[in-house]
Amino acid sequence: MIKFARYEKNFEKEGITKEAQERLLASKVLIMGAGGLGSGVIMNLAAMGVGQIKIIDDDIVEESNLNRQIIHKYKNIGRAKVISAKDWVQEFNSDIKVELDKINLNELNYFNVIQGYDIIVDCFDSYESKYMLNEIALRHNKILIHGGTQGFRGQITTIVPSKTGCLACVMQKPKIFKEEHLASLSPVVNVISSLQALEVLKIVTGTGEPLMNKIMIFDGLKSEFKILNYAKNIACEVCSANER
Image (cartoon, rainbow, N blue to C red; front, side, top):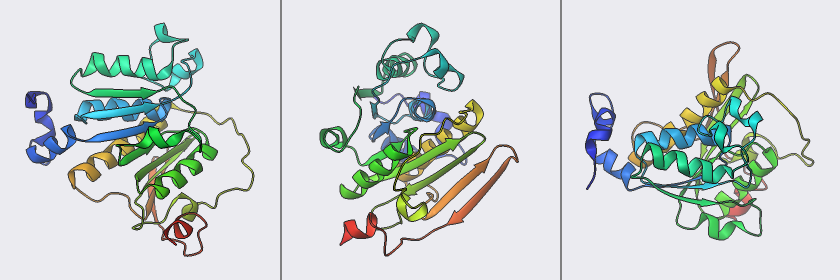
């Protein structure tokens, strides 16, 4: 029995329709990473009423995470992030089905992880992992909602195989990835993760215009959003090669 009373504010005036809410409740979303971005995405999807989520992360909760990873509690320091995240969801909205994998995703173990999910939300904090996920999503025809933050800035775009360019079209994949330790600020992380959840809402319900072939840039220092258009690079070594 669907408890529509919980979600009635979603489909009041200028919200989504009741039928769109039903699509949300029947949807399945794969969340890659249960850190800062993952926390915000999980929180928003649970509040909106996405019926099933799967959370992937191989890390444990540390005290230094708590400045922006808002679903993890102090008492969960030392526990697996996926378990801490599942506990939060079940306490907040027990109607949502939660799957999890405590796994370091790579090219050898990803196949079973992504099965049954057509929407992937990129909440990884490593750009090397983000480019790998971009390639996996294209290879298996999955919609990918990319998000990333660096200090006061963040970005988001939605990648749809055969319809949009990909992450490598927007930003050429580096030959060598350099590890940088940049600040992760809760307000910036929350802005980007909320926008990622909004992209899920738009894709699942067919409401509004997803950020397809558009990348939204947020500058927290200037309180400014910019949208930059991009197109598929016909010479892209990832999406164009994948289609060939």
